[in-house]
Length: 308
Image (cartoon, rainbow, N blue to C red; front, side):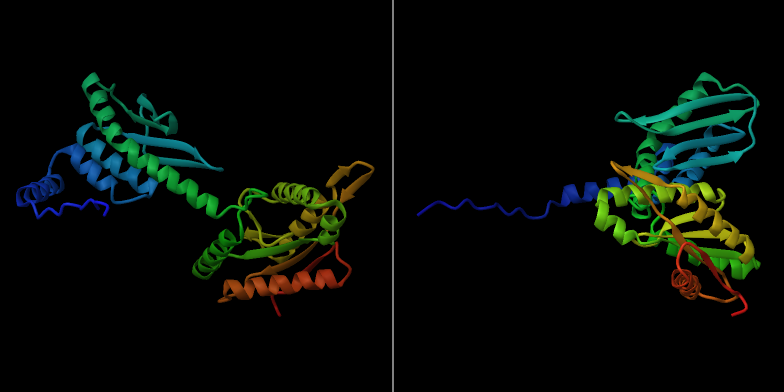
């Protein structure tokens, strides 16, 4: 018979467990700045909240007039600013294990002493790991809300934005309009020229959509060849003008496929949000307007009038 090794079972070790409990209690109750800072930072993955905590804890040790942080995360520029500046500053690049996690600066009217700079650097050394985790969390959230092919926000991001727009519209009475834009006869492009050409057209279409709208507007990939544009502070006629501009931009796209140039047109449906309307009802009306555009020969814009 083979000898089967046994796993020794050890009983509880009261002294070690008691020491562990005491260490945990000491860490939770420790009044020193670095322990308190570390405890507070560990409670959140919100980068904004972490920077607010850092600003509060640093101010208890080194007075300052302004704290500014900036970092490019994914496709977004994250900026945090607290207070008003002064002529003297200390600036830091936050790096960990070869990766960059933003720049942070403190400003005030008086020059920082060497002892104060050392204290700030000690606090930043306790902050960099939580900041790294928060930056990675933002990047993961962005990836979950971004269409991987075109780089514009996806349907999930659109649903969140529409719900927020409905809340703001109800609260402040602001006008919001929605455009649904569908590339005409796109299945034929994929069938005749392949999905590589089709994907390239989708990327170019997304780029032209972003060129046709304001920075305050939002472009989403709503479906396969369907896009959506959310227009804040925009009434029906202005939204229709934007839709027509989108169609003109998309009509300029030309992809050379050897002996053939491939182009595409688009149909657009427009709906301005009605009072107390849900996001689903709003999208349904825009989709109905898009259906009308398709039914009237494509390459045109139709509006679902707000009086309906």
